[in-house]
Structures are given as C-alpha cells and as structure tokens.
Image (cartoon, rainbow, N blue to C red; front, side):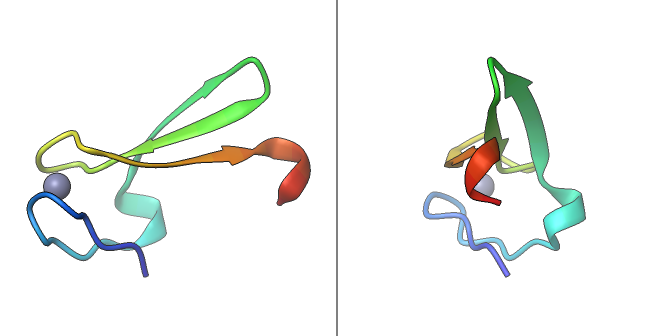
Length: 44
Ligand SMILES: [Zn+2]
C-alpha cells in the first residue's frame, strides 16, 4: 500500500490520483498532491 512521504497518509491504489502521459503513469497523493511515483507502462 503506498504511503505519502509528505502527509504520511496511506492510500489504496485505487484512491491515488493518476496521470498517464507518453506511456508513463504518474501517481500523486489525493490529499496533498505530492508526487508518489512514476511507473513505466511496460514494467507493470
Ligand atoms: Zn500526501
């Protein structure tokens, strides 16, 4: 379960804010908007 480094919140994967751009997935905290990770689509 992902944990935000800024606000310390724990979130279900489905609660995270996601953006998809040029084949990359950017994941952000739904509470504070902190960037939590970037995932290459091919690595899933
Ligand atoms: Zn946060």
